[in-house]
Length: 213
Image (tube, rainbow, N blue to C red; front, side):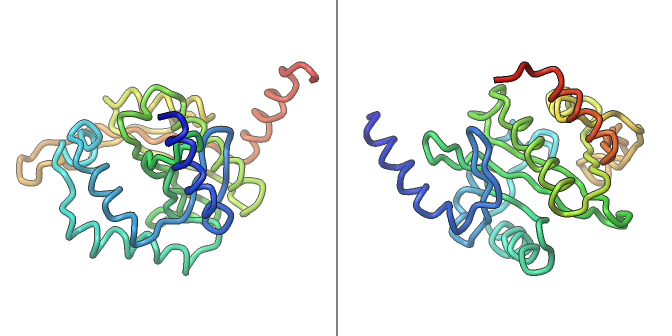
């Protein structure tokens, strides 16, 4: 079994050099392709994964193939350094989910939105924080990003902890329509943010607290 896992991981590694956007200690973030349709269908089929996205309703395959994947691929053509990135576990070659790092609607110049959706097998292992920190660093140091923002439902404590561990702080709370149109309900949403200057201060403090090797 161990040799089989190593063989699968090696097969994935052969394609990483061309597709990888960035690597962390345990993850590779790579471009999506049309071959990822099954991965996305499987991810969105888990009601726990979709709890705070659609109220647990899976995304139809037709919507993934006709809307989501074309939109993902379109980002690579329009933007340098921004888009949706498939998350691959280095040790196994397994697809874990995705991150997005892109300008939001009506965003100010230099502002990008961070988001993520990971399989339950990746929850509680620090992967969301690891990938978020790497994307933030790359954005601030290589792509001229000035501010990173992220949103979550106020009750989504796990996602809020990831934002805080990645260095973002709460800037506002607001309301938006329910995940079930027509019921008239409102959801409480939180927005977190991190400016480039604050990130530099955090980065220097982190470096100073680490003992020399």
